[in-house]
Amino acid sequence: MKLTADLGLCQGHQECLAEAPELFDFDDDSYQVVVRITEPSGGQLDAARAAVKYCPAFALILED
Image 1 (cartoon, rainbow, N blue to C red):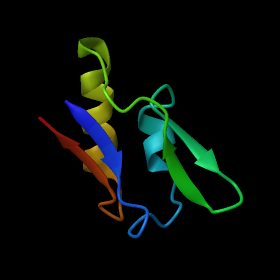
Image 2 (cartoon, one colour):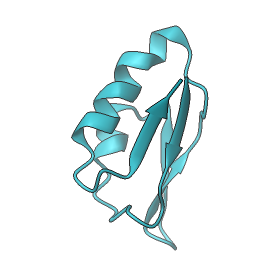
Image 3 (cartoon, one colour):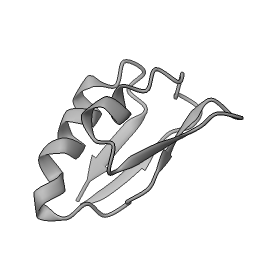
Image 4 (tube, one colour):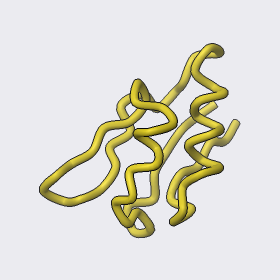
């Protein structure tokens, strides 16, 4: 599975950090998400899915 962020959509809500702090970081200068782990392991997939689900800007993508 591959985890990416569409920075054109990211609005800096940081919900992804609340759901999966091990997978994401935040750039204070650009006010956008940074994907720290682009290929989450099996144990991280539930957190990745939650981050995608709860992103209010629909900026996160998890695909096969």
